[in-house]
Length: 149
Image (cartoon, rainbow, N blue to C red; front, side, top):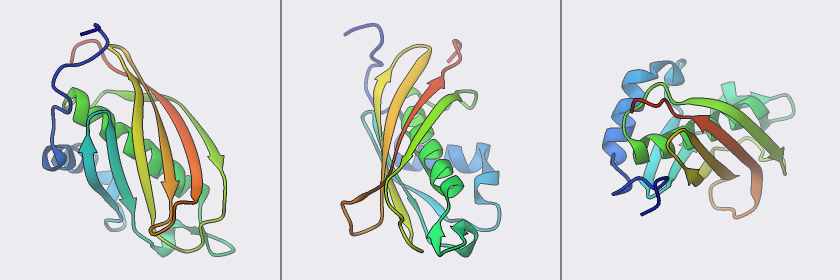
């Protein structure tokens, strides 16, 4: 196995990853829970953002910052599930392409890690509205992983 490839992926299941996020990042639920981790797998995670008025912008669409937060936490969850509980893995870069106006609806983020190395993780997120295959947003991100994990 190449040195970049962690053995036995994922190392944390859905319940363990969710518990870690809830414990270490309770601020993500400020104002009420609207983010739900639905699945983790080898180099992947799926997260749902439920519809809430606080995520809307004028014109009745989900705001860019809400989609950005969803993508960031979905990629982070994919990393955590596959390396274990490392609270100090941090985002170093995020890039977004907003492709269509989603309306006032919840969203689903499918995160996939393209590279999971010892020091860096690189991934992409596809965001859609539930029941649609049309992309609302495409995001890519890079995360720094602390050396002592």
